[in-house]
Figure 1 (spheres, rainbow, N blue to C red):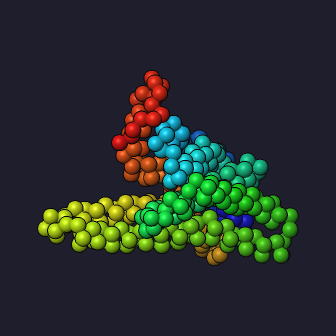
Figure 2 (tube, rainbow, N blue to C red):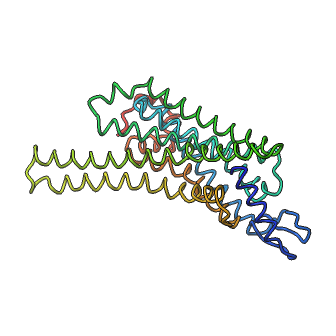
Figure 3 (spheres, rainbow, N blue to C red):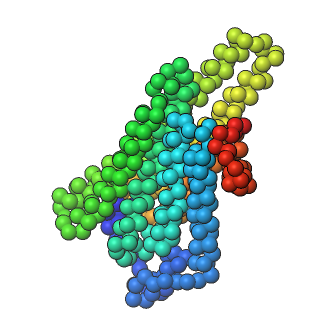
Length: 340
């Protein structure tokens, strides 16, 4: 969260103070002296158990993807290297961002913005941005695979994939580090610094979400249209309408379903949080803290879902997962196994 929205939320907290205990988070409350204190209630315990479970699923799911691509030689492809990079980012989200956000939530950091809150925010911005940018790179890879299959191997080779991965992580690191630098500078200066902070917020929002989301939306729309055109071309040139119509229709439905799931879950996870962040950064609209917390956790849950969205679409990943979970890979050398 940027500095401008933090100032606005601080103002909202001051305006909405009351003379009674105010519940603003399952694990915190404001006492009569307007001091945020811990509230280790049963709801708080359930809250941590639930979020801890999400963290464990995110770690285990992405770890399966990482082990599969590392171990099985069949999965050593350019596309899977991008999925590997995505899994690393999402694994770190589950391993670092989930626990840190549980301990140093948005609510607590608004009242006590110490070093650990800055560390949590930096990891949050860096790793989540990397996850989104890796998703964008995967969409670019899929575009060339579907829309330009004859030149795909030449354009998307290992060298290009490495560059895409380095750019994704490099841009994410710049945004994450820049986030904490802007926050520190804003605390010691005013006037022009507020303008710099505002510009940083705008650029951060654009490069962290809006630009990758627009690119992904246009790419997947293009892929869908090309897939439909290819299916109809196959129908006209190789088979009779009465015999192949159902098959082609099934192909179109599968393409529509796949792309709808990919973009639908991505937008459902991230769009509400970034819209809320945008509103907070550039308007005086009051947004309740519990809603901000909820949207933040909804966005983070995308890192838990990515292994199932991208990996489980492919049967060879499902075969790899079964071999890993059953412990078969520790019983012998299966690196050259043919995954079906």
